[in-house]
Length: 354
Image (cartoon, rainbow, N blue to C red; front, side, top):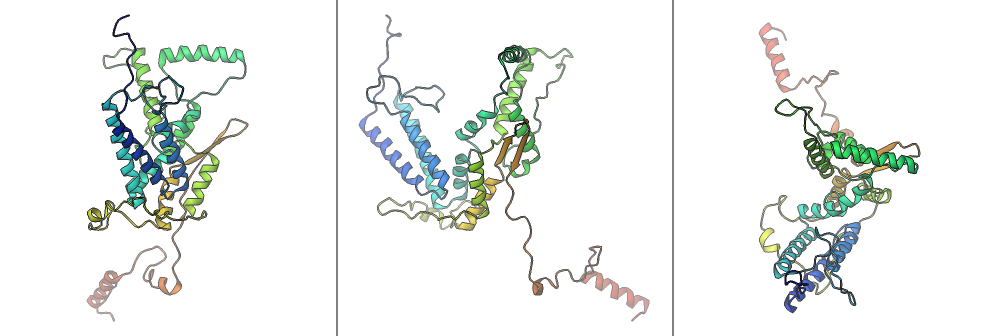
């Protein structure tokens, strides 16, 4: 047996590096307890625990640690370079959590969008049920469907599933409230002929359809479950009471790193803000506009409902405040303001009228 085919020994982390991972792991879990959103606290705690467990060797288990979020499942920390990359990404994420808890709007938006599946890993987990085609009724239909599907995909590439198409069509008309690239078209635009006037090769047709499907999946916002959608709606409308930010425990190492660096800046979007119930409602409101609820009835008809703003109209003014606002405006909404009155008086003087 050659030396290249021999089993390479697993890389063992130094004790100092293990202590660094343990320190960051504890700080990450501690910061998640201070997040203002209860669902975000639960999601990020489970996410951090699963990510660190993927690299933790089990007792009485000689197999490699499983990493479900890595490109190569089961890849352990095999070098010091890999450990450095993981430490750097952990510190960057810890910095984002600290900034979100300190009141930075941009960091808080990133944390909430990941927790509610608007971006990141959970987005593609929520999209998985809508990326599959409808199952056939019997085995004969299954055989015919498989034959036709394999033949069509071999010739023209994958097609857009029905569930993904329904979400994309609904989002295309609702795209004004979603901070992402708008959906231009649902189906791939494949020309019949190439630049030389010849029929488009099948290999190019397949590649164009695959590329369009992957781009469509990147742009589509997955729907939430009914319970989660209703909970977010109640938070956005203020119907669910918000307990505010949790106070820091004594000895937890409150982050004061931003005070000398950022509090001297003028108020703006880049600095921290005092997060109140009103500001948190606006954060949930913006997030609620990007979330949808989709259901399919017994007849196979899809119904989709998007979040709407809580403030549907402009508050009415008191009678004593609104009396003089529309003074000088006729029924056709044509104003008779200061300039119009001045011109009318000048015209009367020129005519010799009183």
